[in-house]
Length: 442
Image: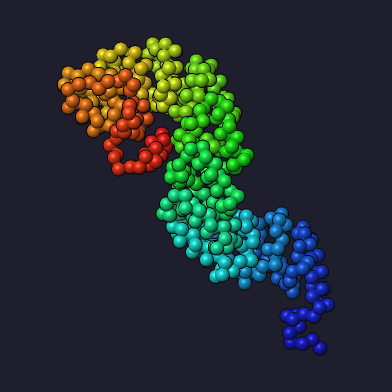
């Protein structure tokens, strides 16, 4: 007679028979059961059928299960339901649970209290917003399998050590959670050391990473170094590489050789700008490499239609590449004001193309009216290329400052005047902060 526990506690022979029956059932479904041979399986086919059907209701296919058949060793009630309930609680939409499990099926083996909850608590401790937890884990579900005292902690500690502000770690993780899985010694530090060797101060690099954490994902040997060599081969000077990268960090991860080759040919063919001039353009505005050619041509065609010789337009673009990214509507307004109100010759626009980058209503008109009321005659450079404070000082002076050397135009930032004198409305910023604000403002 069978005992009262028969069917619950099976003997060795019964377990072997049950395993054969279950494996045969899985084979009829197309599931490869080889990896399940050493694992404890349910006692009946009905229990296994329940597991398969539950996973299929989540949206997993037989092919998905074959990618990780070990998920069939998880109990629906003891493992799968508690884990899925917790994932939904922390922000994974129910409709995305199947996709989440398919991307990281190992989560079904995890303990909610011992393994999952501590990782979520760690992310909240990094200032990842509560409503962003689901988004972060959806992008990088493997985080749930990391040890808190391992890679995650060391990568955060290193980033803070190079100047990343602790309050910005949370937004960085939200933007690029993969940084928590990157080893400092083999991935993060070599990239940081290389960029610093190019002349980027660590404080500037830290600001770059805060805004664009995905830079950490650029492969140093396969992408970053070849792109730097590519810039040099196209005539960009080594001493300005740091400035180019600070202005446009994405340039480190682009298919750069193809983009530079295409744009250089276009500039030569359409704008009559030779390779040397093209290199100067990239140094001043590296975003040009990603600017669509039809966008570039609109401002150029506007200038050519104003009876400016193509040679002069080429000079203007080389001197101030920002004009090719200007809106033609705004350029028209500024141009018509220049022609109708100032009565100045077009030669002055060729000499100072930066005129088109200033706001007509907030800078050009007010300053011109002030000069007109005082009867002062000066160049566009003297009129516009200074802070409001310096402009007022100039108006109070009894002389026109010499322009034999002239200030260096840096759109939206401080002016480097002869003698390294710095003029700006912001006097309390560090030099590194100013460089970063100036270069990324574009």
